[in-house]
Amino acid sequence: MKCSGRRKCQHCKEFYLPDRRNLHHQRYCSNAACRKQSKAESQRRWAQKPDNQNYFSGPQNSLRVKEWRKGNPGYWRKKSSPLQEPLQDLCRAQVAQDEEVKTIEISDALQDVLVMQPAVMVGLISMMTGSALQEDIGATTRALLSKGQDILARRLWSQNNAFSR
Image (cartoon, rainbow, N blue to C red):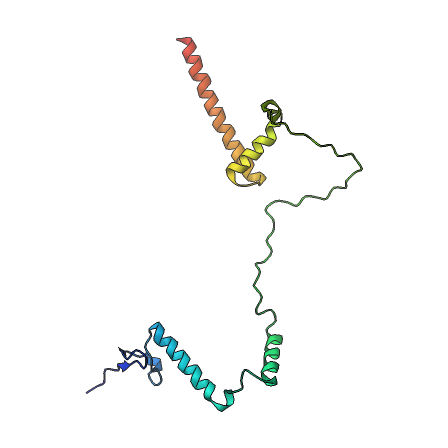
């Protein structure tokens, strides 16, 4: 009669099928608590060996760690992502001339704001798209212009038809 191959876990006492590659030494099932117990027992057995009793103390350990650190520089540092090129061209540096800086006072009056219409439009489009890239602002501006021309053309067409009746 052939044995079913099932074993009793040394921690939870439940029956389990051991991995075929570890038949000769697997004594715990795959439950998380049992794996934790297996690890603790394994570490306890390792630490009881005479060669391992002072493994983490003394000048030999210090020298071993120093040697390892020399062989693995920067191991504990975060890996930084490679530098990426900016999406826009860099601005060339301009030499500043000795000129008096003029401050521009911005008024809250609507007519004063309308004088700065191009800047307001660029800022508005930038906020709408969530991007300050010239390509994105340009594409959105072209789409807005086309849409506005379509709307105004329809309005003029409907007004002309209303007057001709």
